Image 1 (cartoon, rainbow over the protein chains, first blue to last red):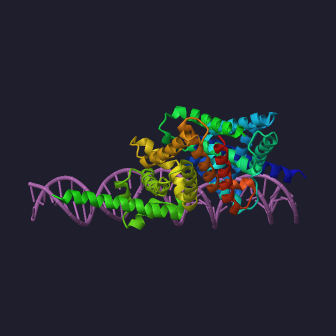
Image 2 (image 1 turned 90 degrees about the vertical axis):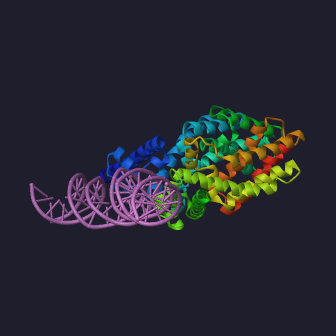
Image 3 (image 1 turned 45 degrees about the vertical axis):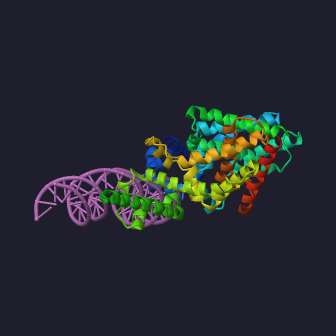
Length: 207
Length: 207
DNA sequence: AAGCTTTGTGAACACTGTTCATTTTAATTT
DNA sequence: AAATTAAAATGAACAGTGTTCACAAAGCTT
């Protein structure tokens, strides 16, 4: 009686195809340009079929977000193998910024746009798995640095938050074009961010 | 011959009324809920009259943003009178975060939303005056701290950017509800941010 | 009072997210 | 194999969006 299984599988496949094409359309057109009808065109189905798989657009964006988290986590996995916790911390920061540069729209979806979060609070099913995992690995690196006295003593979560807030702040200001406030050419913006990161890390290491 | 002047004045008054009502509607309904027709209703004019004063919605948002910058700058002016540069720096950070908490929508408009920036690059008229001013005052406090050796030596702009990125990162993550990743109750989120700020400042002061 | 410029309007266009009655398709039962 | 039932997919529609344009109202100049 593999028929039900096959139908279920086909349904999941279609769902994944929706998420995949939605992701492509999203990175291509940005958030404003992403429409349900555009996705429907790409999967060659009627727009209404999307609502058979997702309550609304927010829930679809949540699925796209989850897929994007997978991409970020994939880049992190290579960093996780670095033994030295301090070097690992630095590598995390660079990888994080690298992801933001390479995938500006997806970065916004992960850490800025409010739409997917509305869906996550509606259903209190806390998907967000990859997000917590990513933060945990950051905390672990911080923990190891603390034990080796490479960081000023303090609460692990707070320190991890401090580092995260810093790199996110840089990425966010850059992507939203607010670094224009520094009155520097745009090509140098990335260099500024690296220098800021170096300054922070040098402050931390003086402990 | 005060007629032309009167007409010009009336035009400016209407323009300011548009910006004012747009601001009110914006903080009330948020970005998604803000529509040209809703603003038109509030000013009791036809929607098309708005396009006599602004090229498009982005340009209107830019004007709202400028007004919001005024509000932020107003809060900063009281901080600017603090003599001790270190205390001034800390006060800036708290005032910045306070503004973000009190005016979440306006904060997004100032530092996150891309729409107004599109207008600012289209016309290369670099309004953005208040933004530069705010950053300059931050730089000045940093400069004074450097001379008193209250901060590790380094480029002034880079240090100012580092501080700004940190508080903006905290505010941004909080407002976009991404601090859920810390698995802490939402009421404690603000406390976490203050602790993170304290950690950063203690690191900086050890120089 | 006639003409002209500015100011304001209503209707329309091409979109958007979303819903619902209807039809097509597939699987099951008779 | 035919009829029945359940699932999947659709087209049309609704209310809303930003924006444009031909047209009307108002005010000023001559």
